[in-house]
Length: 378
Image 1 (cartoon, one colour):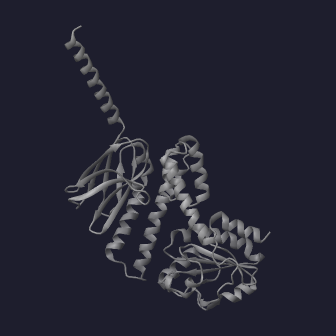
Image 2 (tube, one colour; image 1 turned 180 degrees about the vertical axis):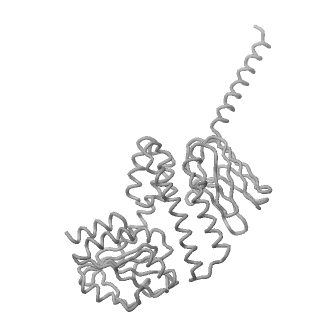
Image 3 (cartoon, one colour; image 1 turned 180 degrees about the horizontal axis):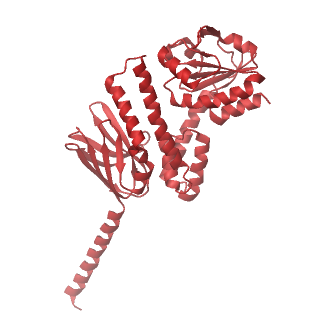
């Protein structure tokens, strides 16, 4: 036997195996080229689950605004580009998928990702012209340092909410696309399961039949759902069975409102806590309007307590939302004695008070709130 020829064959087979392995790895690699203006000599990372059990997938150093992150892709998932400047941490959403990805941070601080199927699709709102304009207005408001309580601050709030709405509507379309389970679940995570956690989890659990329970994106969404469930449950049990705490406060349209008088005159009173700057609070108001129209003639009263500290913002938001029930505030925000009397550790928040002055429910949201009110008036 020709030993030299035999060794040559072995070396050739080994070389081909290495080449095939490298080719396969090349096809399954996430390759991100990044650009962050005015950043230099700063560490940057690609991180999975930044607010949980964080895992760094790749590292580099930003040099004169440029960096490069690369890692193998075992599963498509939500990740974050993260870097620190002094004591501040900056995080940007990115989708981990195979292919060449370009990442850019604009002068306003908006990240824009291009390349790859899911980065183009799921994060497409970042490049939407309306979103870019809204982001620029938010940035301009911050740069101008809007005077607290003035019209400039109100405009800043409106710009922020407009930007939020554009992103939310876009991601909800991805969530409800009905064709791609991976995109739907990643959108659910980016939305933090809003605006309706129960309906969103129906989509997530349906996707699990296709992706499998061990899929990272499925586990990520379920972990988020579980954490939110624990938090909501802890809020809902507070003060139930206890007497309400009375107050008399100025109404938005003038005069004074005493909660006790309304409680005594109504079968049930929903005390709702909100603020002009609270996106989910204001998103809830149309639902409250529907309930009020249906059940106010049957004995339901709603009293809204604003956690604003700016009268101007409170007035403008109230005018915009056009609430037809009593709307009060002491403009002390979270320092208000009213807030200390009720289980408000995040808004929107609410309690339902019966005519005898006993709290029968607290901090119900979405369908739970509607179902509770419906049940009370059956």
